[in-house]
Amino acid sequence: MTDHPTITRSDVDAAARRIDGRVRRTPVLPADDGEFGSESPSERSSPGFTWFKLEQLQHTGSFKARGAFNRVLAAAEGGRLTDAGVVAASGGNAGLAVAHAAATQGVPARVYVPETAPAVKLAKLAELGATVVTVGSKYADAYRVAVEHTADTGALFCHAYDQPEICAGQGTLGREFTDQVAGGLDTVLVAVGGGGLMAGVAAALEGEADVVAIEPATIPTLHTALRHGGPVDVDVSGVAADSLGATHIGEIAFDVARRTGVRSVLVDDADVVTARARLWKRYRVAVEHGTAAAYAALLSSAYRPDRGERVGVVLCGGNTDPADLA
Image (cartoon, rainbow, N blue to C red; front, side, top):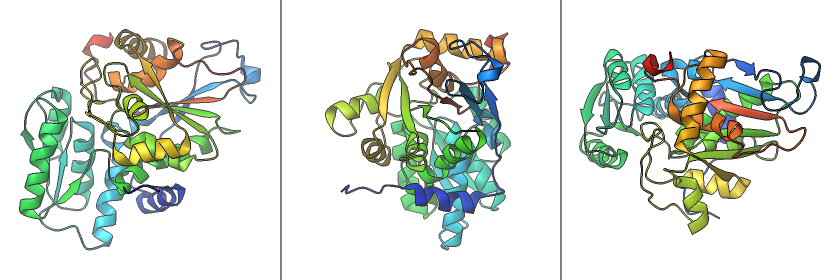
């Protein structure tokens, strides 16, 4: 038994009912024939094919809208959403999602960001009407001040990845993905930073499909936690630090990963950069470096599917500057 909050499939199902109509059912795209093997169009209904979940088309450009809506709407149902509004600490995507959810409920949003937050995300936060406060060089710095502000004001704190409602909301993507692929999926590859998406998807698909956590070698949060038997701080660096820059895996994510058998696969920054460029050149899909990590695992063979394995790749965010994709 865990001493920390956790989530199960029932929590994800409840989140799906709560956020129904608030989020987009994002499309699924089959990988090109032969990209990872010898698949042909006639084999698409047979084992051995790869699909992309285009979650970068979600509201605010990432999967984070799912968890933010679940957290905010659950609080509204429980009378915990007040005029003090909501607070988040985020490198960008979680803050965007929280600001969007807050705006739909008519309450203010205050988002604390580290200095590494990219300009494209800061501009979108401003467009959503959020108050943005820059603190320190790491997510942990922004988190500390956000928690202090929450305690002082009574605002609703929305964690970027380690609250049950947040994780359960993110997990709605997993159930949706498998429902969209005829015959289902054997394995789902998910990029991991703090692990909220991984936790939700693994809980949603427990006993149905395997979930593999793909992490940059420069930010091995789950990989290190599994080796040490619990979340521990890691150094944060590399091309994906703006979106996968949590200093440790979340308690919920670690519990779900251990319970469901999620394993970690590491990818190099160079392979992430290559994968991001290839997604643009081959599919005209623009994603963040962190998002490209899941695809990089297949391209680099860091993850090698078994013969006949049906693999889903989550493309979880697209809040990126496309200037270097031309």
